[in-house]
Image (spheres, rainbow, N blue to C red):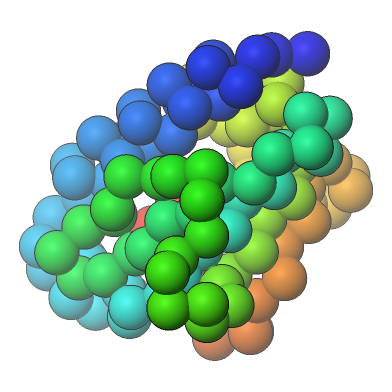
Length: 115
């Protein structure tokens, strides 16, 4: 089990990795969505926003507008770190039940192209 600080650092690396995606790919596959990443073993949720210009830094407080996230991920702290480090494939984690994603089919297909 990882700490909240290690999860925060992993999410910061994810933001940096997202910046490496080409502008063309972001233009094709990204629509603005609010994100919630629940770390099940720590009982903490991080909130962020994805848009064509990038991925905003994740925060531990929900957005002030009170609108719910359109894309919700639930996973363990260890799986988050493994995925960000490239050691755990998202598709395998989904099929194995290690990661749960609550999102529309369209959002899932778009995200798959980016990960």
